[in-house]
Image 1 (cartoon, rainbow, N blue to C red):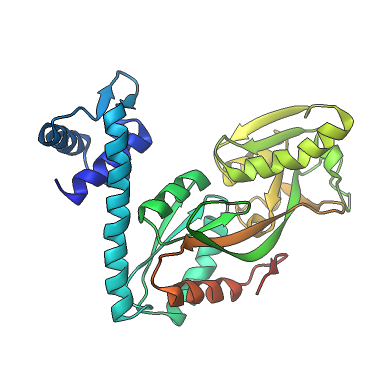
Image 2 (tube, one colour):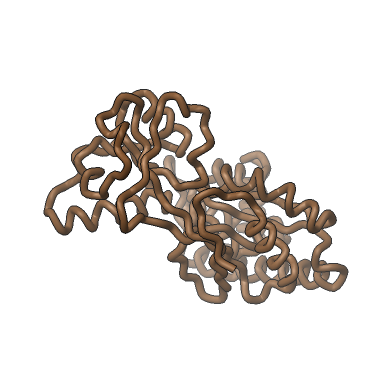
Length: 305
């Protein structure tokens, strides 16, 4: 039994699919399948029920996967302790970020962090909030950038900045010359949203939910996109309107085709925060990351010291 085999079974249990699990482990599917089968034979128990479309974890397998998760966390802790003993600002820092933060913050953050801690290489992973939470607990990442609320046992939270939302409309839209847009007006438009799993989608729907609850009216129509950049292009093409976080406004190369308008007060915002395991032995690395984020030029956001 090896740590690699334990990582494989945790990945299969998480993904419910051998192919996707192999991708997350950066190995071929046959390599992963053979290793899992070998572990099952060694333990004398079936860990997974193989179906044509999805993999199910057996009752015995569930208990073993949970124990494997704990073993991986503790093994990661050993590496962290060794790294901290050498130099807390030396060695890699594994950073996870949600999809709606990474593309807009990281290009500014990385050069600043390199200057502040040149020996601390940044390893970056982008994913959904719930996947990043799993990676944080398993020790696959050291710290994550997420939008609050975020609640996980054994995890420290440090808010970094408050980011306002803006409305993006296509050029020629009747709101084009407006100074402000209200949340209730938004519910009467064809609204472009991120797909399921994105916390930013939930935050936008929460804005509209308050209006729907008050007026008892549904959103006129919603269309989904896979990323903010896809949605931005759809707005430019006249498909509908959307909500964007402030840091994303200057990106995308569609400035001539869309107009960005502020919300009327109260302006909806999201609070972006760092989250890390309380047991993480390199607080100096977290502090260096925090300072580097605060040093980034982020127009429209309110930084929190």
